[in-house]
Figure 1: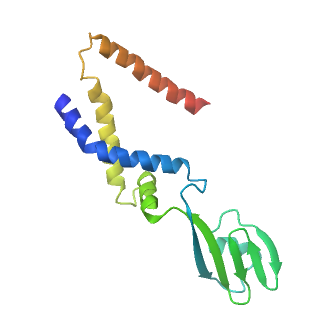
Figure 2 (figure 1 turned 60 degrees about the vertical axis):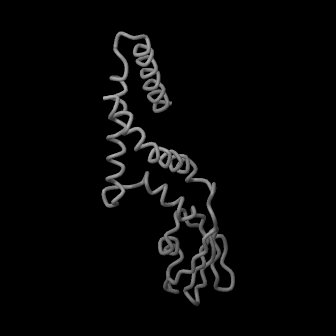
Length: 161
């Protein structure tokens, strides 16, 4: 068990480092941390109703700030009603960092979900195999059980609070 634990640990060290970085990035996903402006020009029908512009541009919580000379201004950009051209500025992570965050958002439609399943199963193996690293009668094993309990209690408290 120790040998499997050791070599799987070495193999997963790189994966765990990448997941750690992407996990921290995911924490800041609702902020502009590390994001850059990306300007897009989108053509939508010029006769689009005002209430449908946000949906056409795929902007959540769309709100028109003002309308002036046939141009509709909103927080993310503007829309020219006569030409049907909208200029939208969005904040996005650089593509390399976006791919990292996609690791955490992978679902069954993404080929990355196999990596997530493998990684989750490997972490579960680490949890179980850690208890075979020391004899149950040793002080290290008993202290390890206390730390395991403390970790579980901490997560439960964080979920409840």
